[in-house]
Image (cartoon, rainbow, N blue to C red; front, side):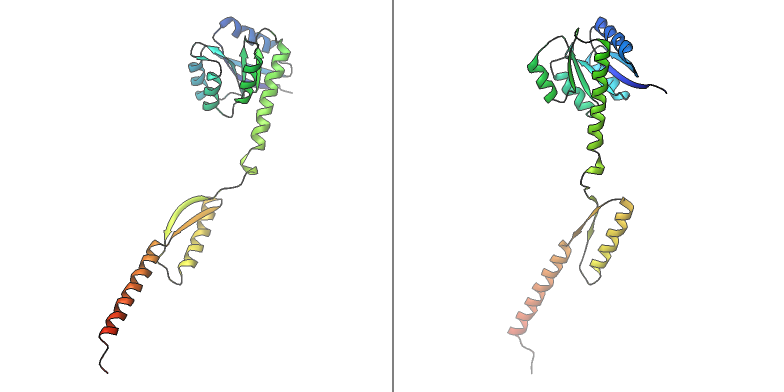
Length: 212
């Protein structure tokens, strides 16, 4: 049975710490393997994130081009469906709470995690994100109609029938609900103009009745 392979983007400015993370994941992966790609700053990391798919981002909170939760917010903006685990040397409960509230899956402190513990934390973060994505899939949401086009109607006996036939055909082509917007502006103005013309003619008839 082949083992699962998770692609991890490690954004860490310290080369020594990056090597320790790689070694820990290689040692403690167990039934899964971690393919670690290293970027030494936030901007190179975002560039890699834009050009390739990753199962998880392991992000240091203190980088040359970002500090605190700035990096987390940037990664979440660029890849909202990719789980992010923060890696830091600060054991701060308040920062850990704010990180989770901002969308981080985990907040891990450097030097306190052995290989199996780190591997398990990353694997759990990936699984949680995938479960969240499955439960919020479009199948479970209300389908919104697509605005395909506008139909300008001048009124008349057959206008409603034509609109219904067009709506059915658009629904078939759009493969989903369709919102067909019918503009009655011309019909209303035409009715108003004809009404005003009839009133004017009636007024002229009252003033100048036809000879009997």
